[in-house]
Amino acid sequence: MYINRYAKKAIASIMCAVTVFSVVACSSTETEDTPSGDASYEAIEKNDSSTETATVEEVSDSDEPYVLPEGMYFSELTGEPISEEIKNQRPIAAMVDNEVKALPHYGTSEADVVYELMNSTKNDRITRLMCLVKDWGSIEQLGSIRSTRPTNIMLAAEWNAVLCHDGGPYYNDQYFSQPWSAHFSGTFSRINNGKSKEFTEYIVGGDLESNFSDYEGTAGYETTYNEYANEGEHFNFVPYGEHVKLDEKYSRFYTANKVSLPFWHNGSTLTYNPETGLYEYSEYGEIHEDAEDGEVLAFKNVILQNCDFVQLDDNGYLIYNCIDSGKYAWYLTNGIAKDVTWVKTSETGVTRYYDENGEELQINTGKTYIALVPSDTWENIIFE
Image (cartoon, rainbow, N blue to C red; front, side, top):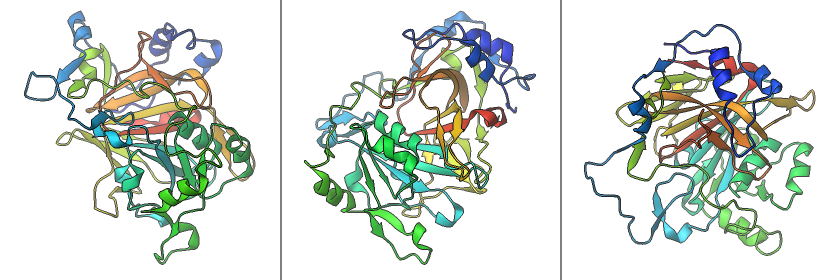
């Protein structure tokens, strides 16, 4: 079953009813963003109202609640247990080149959250990855590292993450000048891989420790969370050991065993593997395997955000309107998709996701992939 657009009247009328702390409001401008045309699919509906209360399911064989081992805590990036020693350590957000010449990637499979964004309106709207890593002290090799764009600066700030990149256009300057911004640029290792220089910069072991040491106490680049960090969870995770099942919690959901994104240059797709329960990422017609260990880049959660953008000049530089409210999104997990909305209220504000009842979306624990899909190609998303 293919999905390439919303049923305009049905979805818009429901989404207009969503209210989120007075931030999400349905307006004429938001209605104009709703993809139009006849729907090429039908929502899977459940009439039994009892399914509305079936929100989570135990994934373990035991009925006993999960007991967090001593010295561990639940990661704010994945909701999974990790060492308490790095609980207050801020993550890094690494800009990874996604041009075919930059492949294979190193270390991307160790990222906790991966964003994919259009990096330029030229070259078939080539994308770039931004990899968030909490335990950056364990990085052996990550990259290759390339330049950043203003949107990535704001997205990294949601996590109080230090953005790791190699230069970028002058449009970045006004964002880097803000007190909430922290970044390392062009300060990583060069690896002789036989490629052109722009494809040879990587974060390797010791690079970040050296960078933080150079900046500590002088530019406010603490290794730990600072006053600009958001309190509480970034994602609304279900309790570890439980599992949200979208086809039981909601009366409207969609089959999504595979999603093809309108990123024309590299042809990003995510395919659900029922054996692992994860969505596996592919591009350039091949499944993505990490050059370090051959691990497939895979995610428990997939989030697709409908987002406008503004082209800044003839060079193809752009900025997404990532501060917005009531915009459409998809959440995918376990082969099922759910239509939701998203809200981001400021440069450092966390992007939140809400269902049609105005309740914050619960997502499963594990790694997450987030794509900002340009609004002018939103209808070209294809589900199978």
